[in-house]
Length: 109
Image (cartoon, rainbow, N blue to C red; front, side, top):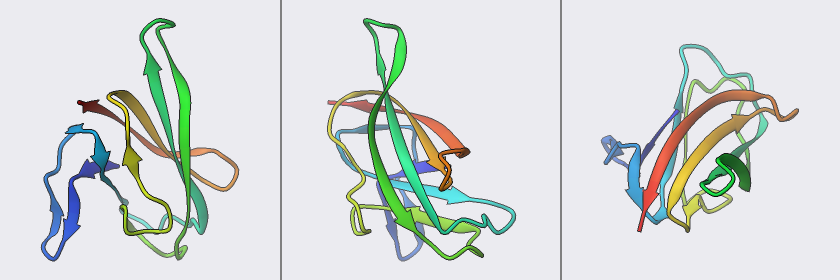
């Protein structure tokens, strides 16, 4: 799992783990079919006062079970928007809320 500014004709554009607030594209690549159809991308934001991650928001998606490569962006069913600056833990969760993939990202103003 990784992040980019957008997905263009030639693939991922602006791959990084640090972005300004706004819309981003989340990309998941696997060596095998992920076997998912209904799943979610969940964002947990780091709370500096409590020194722990807290639930922020969740986006729901549906894909074909044989997919090995998939990207999620603002043009999909749900907008993938990071509205607030901070450190986020991002999870790809199956339909039972089990972690399939995860990554960290920093959003700056």
